[in-house]
Length: 453
Image (tube, rainbow, N blue to C red; front, side, top):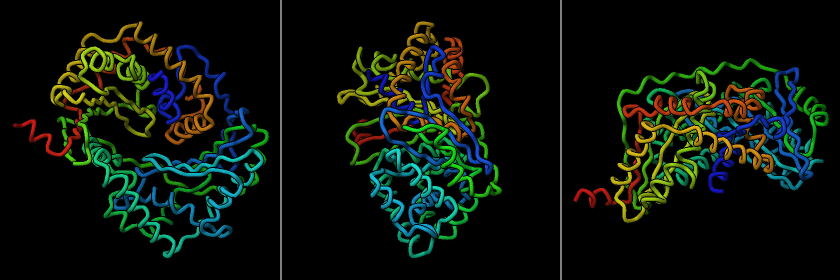
């Protein structure tokens, strides 16, 4: 069950997408899609389990598209999008949604920004009207913007500055990407957040926020026939604008292994992770992303995985151990190994055993039976993905904002079914290269001195 839950959470996060050894995608989401004259793509996924709907508006822009020196601007604008328009005053958006029994929020990544509301079916027109209004009608002044900037700085202090794992993650990210903007945290560096302003936010807004740079996804108790006239009424009247193409700086080859360590009094038990750059769906040639997803399921996904069975169950070295892989980035992704030792096991021993097991898997490879079982487990997880209302809009939103299509998502099960043991073994050997890794170590304060003695 643990393995199924991990894959399901990955599905909902847009990382696993739909999985299966058989081509069952037509029976899972059955999306309907159309485009408005202004370029807005609309996707409708009917789910009649309850009389509710979710609207998600995705913009094809994120933190990696920011101007140098303005880190955090995409996330800052996300906050400011709730501050009012010419029609609705500051705070009215959220108040109206709440008054009508709905829930709403937003999030920013390196590659996209998304805004979403979940409401009763008969309130869909209301939230569509609200969301369409702030696509072009945002009104910002210093008395609104500058206090919110301090809110974002406090968010960074609470989520990063007081969180050793987040601090280490930032340094690992910056170590893995020397040149590409993925090296910069989505929330931004504090000294640059401090310099963000009404001007920087509005410049970003007018540059990227347009119907022809967005995807509207409606999921729930509705149909495309019902959604189309509403989309045309509220969004269709917004004119398209010139939006620049994404111009990302490429990452040079990595020629030396990198290692970062952090000690903190807030850490109670040590952990270690090893990251390797890996292809994404958009950047890969061939089927490497699909092979690496199967690899992730085989060696690092839950209690049935090779690493967990060996290091946690059989020999008791690890309290937790596994892998993760994200092929959904617009540019490169990461394949990650991680381990946390049991209290009586030194971290050095746990690291050594993890690396030995990785090398063993590389040398011996996975089998046809390993692949078949992984595909079966992933197919089971796809069934669970039908249930949460949030799963489908998240899956399609992440795909459509990072260079994929509805057809790509729908064809995913066949691509997984085509993966062979040879594909998996080849893909693993290609990415697991010692001098192309970043190792991160999180330690309780004083542990390294104790080990040295």
